[in-house]
Length: 120
Image 1: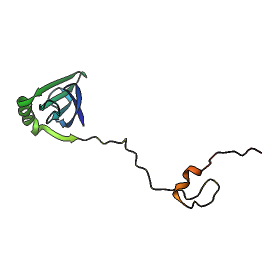
Image 2: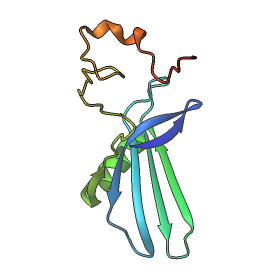
Image 3: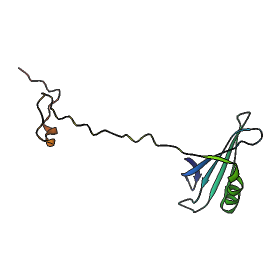
Image 4: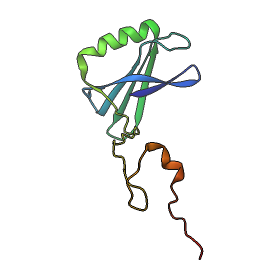
């Protein structure tokens, strides 16, 4: 997922990798079908040449749709990003308390005295 700046915020877009044309190392296109604020269609082409200079071309609305249709045959694949920030936790539950005695119910977590020292 790429991002395009539209209406004062970053909007999530579909990212496509294009076959690089002459003198370019990498070509990528970001397509925003409809901005949630203004409703515009936005296409942005980003290219990197052999000298590591970045050029970008941006179109909106009717010109954007024509430009995207023109570049469709050159698309190699859609770039998909995965969200690894989601933490998947297991279902393990310890049925013994800190003294090695089996717990009788699940509601005694507030009664645990882990690390508590007795003063003699």
